[in-house]
Image (cartoon, one colour):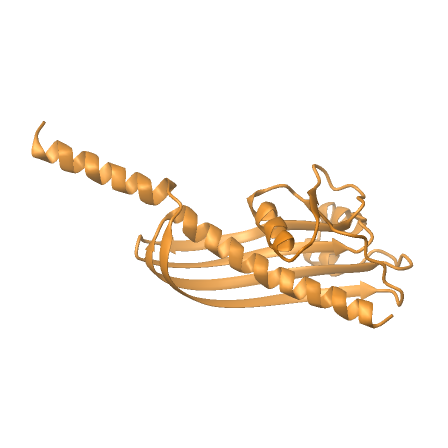
Length: 194
């Protein structure tokens, strides 16, 4: 086999490894922010565990973060009332500029939460023509319920050796940590106001 064919095959293999592989070594500079809105009654009741909708890559990362913190998690196939705290999560936008050695990216996610496992706020959001307005408009009070929405945004600059898949998962991991920190703090604040 000619030398140039061997080099070409080697280069194709390397490119495929960086595209389909899941590896990363290096340093990251991360900035995160979370905007949230909470509506709650005085006697907030929180069901045990969380029901996460949808069962997506990002949903699984959020569920893993919750499980790492000791919470029980189940997935919903549709936005229906559940036996845990309802949590609808989705990636609103993700932008990356990637090379194997330097990557920059941003990710924005949204979350709708109900302490009583009710998807009403999320369903109203889904069916709204003005989604931004509906996200911040809560469903009429239900005794003992806490409703919340969160919009989490992470920007990142990473240097090192990394694959595309690893970098995208890195962004999702970081934004999941930021939003779970904010959500858990909001839940604790509501419980202390009893």
